[in-house]
Structures are given as structure tokens and as C-alpha cells.
Image (cartoon, rainbow, N blue to C red; front, side, top):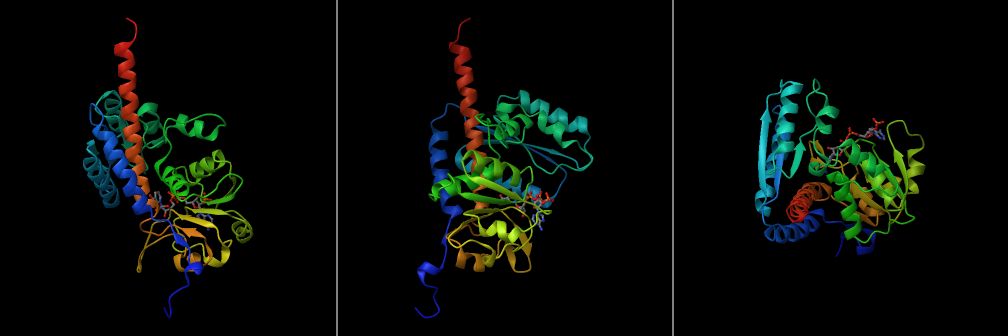
Length: 299
Ligand code: NDP
């Protein structure tokens, strides 16, 4: 048709919404087969509207999957002791199989100390220092992998992208996305480069990348002409602009060069949420196994 881009000229879109919907059905079936509904506890300090929206969508998805959710809301000026006391009570609560502390916490709180109180087996966000440490070590397996990078990996797997020996570039090195993403790609035997705000020669690094993961937080920061033709682009960025929600990658120009690309919205976003649900289900399954062992064990 006139004006239409020939099929070979446009990238295959990796449809995160469809992949997340398929995983949702798989999880629903697994939840239905459990003796007790898995429970996710969320903790929110302060009343940031975006955080409220995220929490609401987590609880909605729990309900859709037949899972339970518990919520603890604390005032923006809650003390370290108050926050720690809530997390400690959830750590003891058998109905909370997974605990999620909505980040960032207000600046006056010690985030590291709060996160370290989440027991490893309930750390469905994967941010406990031991989980992160295991992720960084060869031959070790974390109990849980942080949800956004886990979602990116699942998109790559389900799209059949070969990672072994691939050149992968992660743009961004945050604790939540960039760093764990680079560690996961390394575990998958990709050769990984991390690009950050001080990196020089970014163009030449990107040009060699078979896989690019963009987690920067700057609208349309990476453009098509910087990419290697045929590469796979995973865009984690969520940027609100006057033109609506856009990623860290300029979609139109990147789509013309890349072999595969995730859209924003509808790429990584839906995967992050469903990975949280998967982690919570896994936490519940493990707790049932432990209970069975205790009941069936000696003494
Ligand atoms: P952070 O702000 O914590 O980290 C941004 C990273 O980008 C930093 O490592 C920073 O480098 C790097 N960076 C900044 N400017 C440049 C530059 N000019 N060149 C190269 N690197 C640069 O953000 P997050 O990792 O938390 O989030 C990144 C994006 O992903 C955001 O848009 C966020 O909204 C989105 N997001 C999406 C999720 C989803 O579910 N889809 C979940 C989580 C986040 P340096 O370390 O040197 O400062």
C-alpha cells in the first residue's frame, strides 16, 4: 500500500502486554491449585500519587489472579522505628508471603536498613542485599530476581533472542534496573557493557550492541542512527511528555533500524507487574514446601 513501510524495513515489535497476559493465565492456573492464596503485602510511606497508582495496580492484579493483598500506609513523616516495626510485623505474618516496600522511601529514612529487614524468602522485589549479592556471583542463585530486569529477560527469552555470546549494552546502572539487568545478561552469557552518565564514546559502544537495554529516564534519548541494524532494543524508560508517555528510545527511528523493539507503553511495564506476581507465587509455594517438610519431618 502506498506510504506503508515495507515489512522488512520495520522492527518486530515485542508485545509485552500480550506476553504478560499469557503469563497471567499461567499464574492464575497455578494459584488455583494452591491450598492457600498467596499473599502480597505492600508498604507505602507518604502519599506520592504515582506510588499510590502503582500500589493500586499491584492489588488489582493480585485480585485478578486469586491472590490476597495486604496494605500498610504510613505518613510521609513516619519515623525509621515506625517503618521498621511494620516491616518486622510483616516478616512474622504467615499471610504475607511476599513483602514489597514501595521505593523510593522519603529521604529521612534509611532505605538499606528497611530493605534488610525483609526476610530473604519474602523478598519478592529482589532488593535484599543477599539476593543482590547472589545475583552478582558466579554459580549462585538469588531467591528472587528484581521484577523489571526479570521482565526484560523474559521478553528476550520469549522472543527467541540469542544471548549467548551476544554483545549487550545496558544504558543506566541503577540498583533497581540497570545494574541487576547487566548481571542477568552476564549470567545468560552475553558480553555486557554498562553505559552511564560518565561514559565516553557512547555511539561506538551502542553501534556494536546486539541487545540494547535502555534504563535512563530521559525521553527519546537513544535514536535509531546510533543502533546496530537488526539489534534488539528493550526500552525500560517511562517518561511523561507533552506528547504522552514515551520511552528512553526514539521509537520511530529505532524501529526502522532494530530487528526487534519493545514499545512504550506496552513493553516492559506490564512485565514488571506480572514478574512481581510470579515472585509472590514462588514465595508462597516455597513457604508451603517448608511447612510440609516441618509437618512431615522427624520429631
Ligand atoms: P535512575 O535515575 O535511578 O538511573 C538512571 C541511570 O541512567 C543512571 O545510572 C544514570 O547514570 C544513567 N544516565 C543518566 N543520564 C545519562 C546519560 N546522559 N548517558 C548515559 N546514562 C545516563 O533511573 P531508574 O533506573 O530507576 O529508571 C530508569 C527509567 O526506567 C525511568 O524512566 C523509569 O521511570 C523507568 N522504569 C520503568 C520501569 C518499568 O516497569 N517499565 C520500572 C522502573 C523504572 P549515573 O549512574 O552515572 O547517574
